[in-house]
Image (cartoon, rainbow, N blue to C red):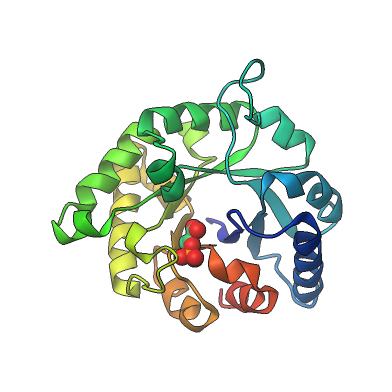
Length: 252
Ligand code: PEP
């Protein structure tokens, strides 16, 4: 059975003190209910990871990083390696978020290298894909997603692919308040699952978690997560509000 996941991407928000306060509130809220059937992950900024690693070590919340460098170590000023993330207690990494593709020119080729490094270092990758508004309006969205997955992920062998979580995040729905309709999201999730089945096999496709991201809120989460091929969400803005995020978690 595939994992149901709710992941919070804090992006470049909160000071360390604000972050500690926020994670304390979230821990408290989550401790009141049983989350054993789902995985909750938080992706704070790098500066928070060491402290969060300690704060979350005994909790039901997993820790992840928003980015890292594919090189193992050395003269790469300003970069953070996979082993550094592991030493802070990270279990997960985000790869290919649209903001990194868009503002930092991260290509599918670079993301494929990051995926290899994550897996070599036993960090579980959440690989993001998704089309822009122009690409959707030109009816190119299937092609774009196919290319992002073919070039970024499908070089992996079966064993390594099984460690990957995919997140479908239409760029036009991220931080805009516009959500893909549950039917639009389901259509793409189903398309991704059928690509996985063609490349690997049915059982691998059935066991791959595919998350939806793009303006998910407590008010729309239930409807989105109810779709057959949607296995949870990658949440940006709403993950910075503990009660709202907790309600999203409870929508699964
Ligand atoms: C994201 O950052 O991955 C995201 C989906 O953001 P938001 O929920 O704010 O649209």
